Length: 314
Image 1 (cartoon, rainbow, N blue to C red):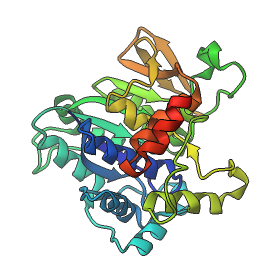
Image 2: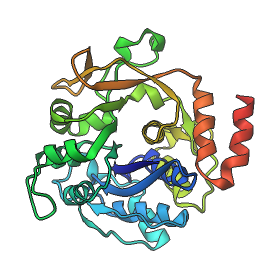
Image 3: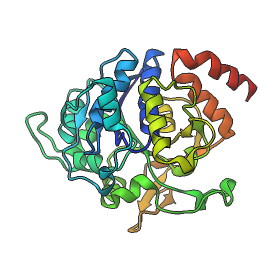
């Protein structure tokens, strides 16, 4: 079983909520173990939202509170405080970098680290110094305790003819929010890194089977109430973050590029140099409807029959 340690900027886009739900569902199926969830956003309600989602699955998950300086995007809170207030949770936990150091220092075997927000806290982990939790600095601690980093970041459409003109090669959102942190992680992370780029999840729409009474269903509805022009006809959302979690847990959904090195440019765009390092990125291999049906089938036992019926028709 793979041990997952997740870092999220939950509260601005509902795919973070869906990713946490997917991790908990995979745990219930014995496919992964969610050992903790750190938050990389200072928006109120972030850790409480994680706890609300976990409680809806009958679980308690260790969470953290981001102590990094707020990013500009942290001023936008679409649903984190809403979940906190509606489901009666509180923001609790130690500071996020210290939380990650604690989890890595106490790991009995290498963990799989999954980052689905700006890389501010992951960069802070790399730059952290020795403390009472571990006598070694962050980079050495990561090298000793992390097997692979899976990160929702980047855009590599200019390298893959299969995408045609569906997308433009622009700075991906998570990277753009903290370009310096993304550059640091790309340059200095000491173990293999797998990038889930924008194009991998943009057309994979999931989450439409979550009821309005659930934390994830509430998050999705609050997201679309905040941005009604993006409403696709169902309460479904692009699946960047759930895909990152699923692939990290070993679900066979995408092809991988050959090894190389991801370079983050000063404007936030990402490029890839084959053969130079231990980075890879995901490449679609199935129709988006098939990938969506597989993900929906994992979300929860109450959704399983409906989603598997959809999958059989895909």
